Image (cartoon, rainbow over all chains, first blue to last red):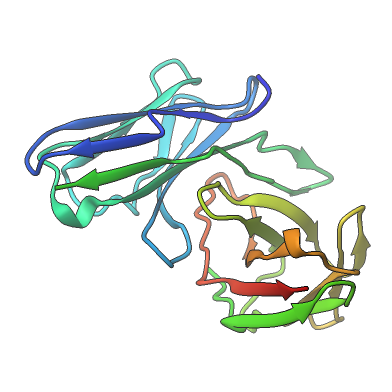
Amino acid sequence: GAGVSQSPRYKVAKRGQDVALRCDPISGHVSLFWYQQALGQGPEFLTYFQNEAQLDKSGLPSDRFFAERPEGSVSTLKIQRTQQEDSAVYLCASSLARVAGGDSTDTQYFGPGTRLTVL
Amino acid sequence: LAKTTQPISMDSYEGQEVNITCSHNNIATNDYITWYQQFPSQGPRFIIQGYKTKVTNEVASLFIPADRKSSTLSLPRVSLSDTAVYYCLVGGYTGGFKTIFGAGTRLFVKA
């Protein structure tokens, strides 16, 4: 694809509702990341996938947050029983995870984000 | 993971060169230095990446001293459209990649 796409772009949920946010990475990208960005802050790492394997989920703030990438391509971030503090922009990024010469570079390409507002 | 320190904000005028310095005293041997740019309502966009010395591309230059404890992003002849937040990151791929963004530097370019 041309770039990373995310849907929906905007989501309003009532407190207690479950939401699902979708990320379509660049075709062929091995790595996929989710971030949470609060207003005026930098993105905060949530979780990382290499193909379908979730290798790092240390940034997920609670067990209400769950991410999956079952076929190693599209990913979904699910938030159960949303709370007001979950209101933020959720960014997805993908990368080739290219390795060259024993070292590696891992440029991440970001989607436009999903702005979640919990009322 | 190396922590980075950047100025919170900077002002400049159109046509000037802007240099944003980032400190990363605890950078590891295999860490790369990457800069991203973010406009409102958009995801961060890759600008430039380097390991040591100087790297230049069509939009910016990145200067890294020998000790690699800091780096400077140089934007030549900025325009109003360069008003954005700029993030400095350090990290490397080790079979897992936890990326840490700081608060970034808010650059305001004035006419």
